[in-house]
Amino acid sequence: MINAQRIARDVVVIGASAGGIAPIKDLLAHLPRQFASIVAIVVHRSPFHETRLPWVLGIRALLPVLEPEDAAPVHAGAVYVAPRDHHMMFEDGVVRVSRGVKEHRTRPSIDPLFRSAAAVYGKRVVGVLLSGLGADGVSGLIAIKRAGGLSLVQDPGEAQFGTMPRAAICEDDVDGIVSIHMLATILPALARGEPVASVRVGGGVLPTPSA
Image (cartoon, rainbow, N blue to C red):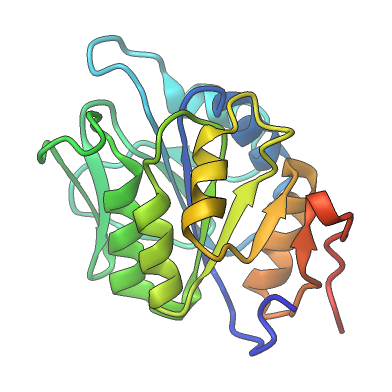
């Protein structure tokens, strides 16, 4: 059982790299307008070329998708996307963006966001790792679990590039291995503080919110 403690998990941090744009767009298209959670996303992106990423991700989204400036206040019901060539982190009710040292040879990197969410929001956090190459986000998921939060990964069989989710499965005792369709059902349930049946796609267990 995921979230048997019935804690409202209303801070969602998502990391993706290669192959991650399509699943994020699909997820945001299916999150309800009343999804009153803080959502923050890091996608590995070129530091040199403007890709209008917030607009691309938000085409079908019901929630506003924003690229924050440094020290922007954090609001539930909004989606924050890391700017190109900047790490994005949480700090005392605001979003910080900075050109700190690259991690995993990239900036933005997933781990700084995940670590900061764990430090600021603790048990309220759900960390989600999607399609990508390498191991960025794995140590961040471990930090989230250590702080009492939850960790979910995209089913590697569904992901265009399953390397990052597989690395997390190997290194971290993840709480769920999910499809994007399942994730869109699970996150609102967790935000409401509902327990969810254990999710292991490979084992054929479906994500059923539990009363």
